[in-house]
Amino acid sequence: MNYEYYDKFINKDTIGRYDITPIFGNPVIFNNLIKDLLEPLKKIEFNKVVGLDALGFIIGGAISNRLKVGFVPIRKGGKLPGKKGTILRTSCIDYTQKKKVFEINKDSIKKGEQVLIVDEWIETGSQIKSAIKLIEDLGGKVVGVSAIRAHRNNKTKILFEKYNCKPISIIEEL
Image 1 (tube, rainbow, N blue to C red):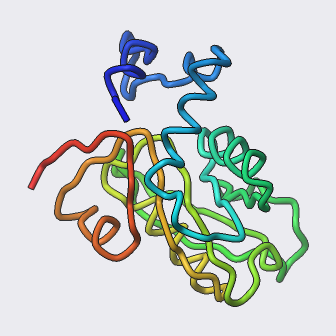
Image 2 (image 1 turned 45 degrees about the horizontal axis):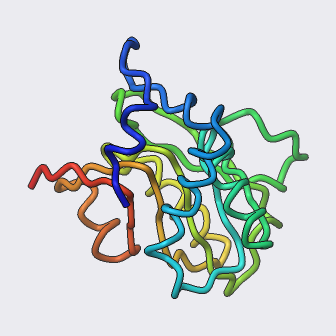
């Protein structure tokens, strides 16, 4: 996996975060991305792919489609239209230092299901940790985390050590 291959398709002329969406517009590059994200996880079995709102939906949906396994979205607070008692919520302070709420339908993951979590970029790990909490509260087991790029630091260390985080590129900060 060669991050530089994808880096030239990432828009850096932005405010705040880099924009990876140009990768999705090129079917060859996008197909290669999905293949490269799956490569280090090929020996891991999972029943579901969980994608975080919003770009994790695109990547996770493509992965679940390719592998013919279920896809589960974890939405930002207030976005799931379920009735009272059908949605599980948790909150975190994200990389922008703002509080975010994440939601999942309670019936989307069954006890014992093995889950791969997908997002585009991991900086502090707070959003992935929120997803892990939701999945584990429903009885699922996180067997891997996939991303285009992840920072390895004191906050994300547990993702690498306990949850099998396998990004295409790692920014070492330890």
